[in-house]
Length: 305
Image (cartoon, rainbow, N blue to C red; front, side):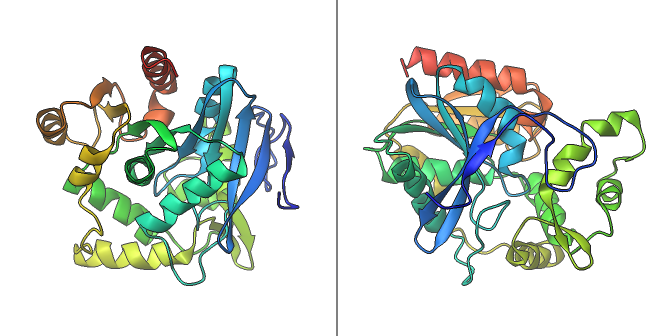
């Protein structure tokens, strides 16, 4: 294990924080994947089949603490920061492909000596986990896609490209970052949001910057300004069809990423997938975590995992 590994006891969240916000106790462990270290938040203890959670493009492992803790009642659960995000290392060569991220997931499994696991991925993370499940049937016994599908609706794709591509390179303060995302930092309602921003930001000479490799800012700024996306490296319809293990797809009823049309296409073209709709937007874990946890728990029970 890397010497940065350690316990994260219940206590104030984030490294910048001035407001106490208690989070579930968990361990922070770094898995080696090639020359990079992948940050893992470890919950629970050995029991049922372990779960690995992979966040989306505009999120971090911190967004999954509540869900990870709830799912760890009878098993081990790890929420990772993808390479280039959060506390994980950045790729010096801009190696952020679906293949690279799939290898990182397997490296996490190896770190914990897990022969088999359940993969849960949100949005872009769902593409990575589904690809990993398809290519590693001997290591993945179930997969869960959270508002992630073989196709993406243009509205959601454009929104995320704007969020990632147009975020300022730095903020003078945590308060300024909150205001940029339309949250008034001086209200009582902001008390719940502030620790999340504190966890997202890192100190830089200009103030604070989002914990994300600037590579993504540059890439998605071009996409936002031109409206042109690079050709996907794989056909995700083929990838989903290749998955051999049970696969649950959760869709937010108000999602702008997985439209009702895409959901209908999934039901028609991939009838083996268990597609469940949850009252939420694209960010199901934030909008309706209890329903997400219930749906995942039911899926695990039905498949005796």
